[in-house]
Image 1 (cartoon, rainbow, N blue to C red):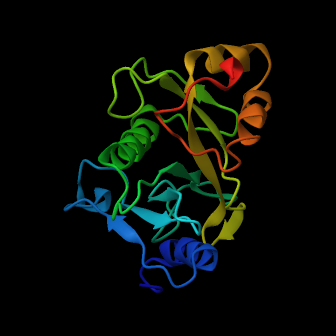
Image 2 (cartoon, rainbow, N blue to C red; image 1 turned 90 degrees about the vertical axis):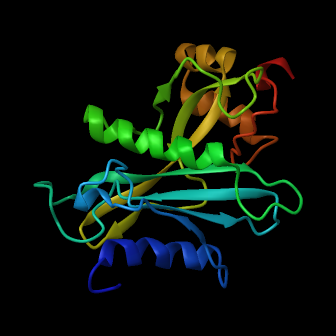
Length: 205
């Protein structure tokens, strides 16, 4: 694949250094976007964290994987790939379905709207995050993935933006201060910013 998809290979090499010897779980559409498929992401890969406590999902397709297409020589595609960390229940062989669906939906949103996400952005989808309608996690924040550094990919710069599920009062606090400040509070008990639909507000602890 290295000749056909050098951007893809470069991302996988980074992930293999973080998760040595681990075979990624992978989801890909039957018809890729490059061939007219509706799903704009070429793939989503998932790895189990070293301690087995959470899943780490990474998108493929918001950056340029196969060739240089955009006119911006500095950045690869949109300049980022999305990531998400979600709890891993004991004995689980794959992340929950909602995590894969979220990455697909947000990837599709970027292509449809032409509006890329950036570090510090926030989003209120006005719906619960995850399968539980009673969850307090109902909005999203975006921050540079704490475990994946920005990289120089074959077709330009690329960073990994992690999606973090937040409560509505955390969202309001971010508007009053900053995304980084509120997520800094969350990092004290959740250093990798795992999106856990079962958690309460860090502001109510």
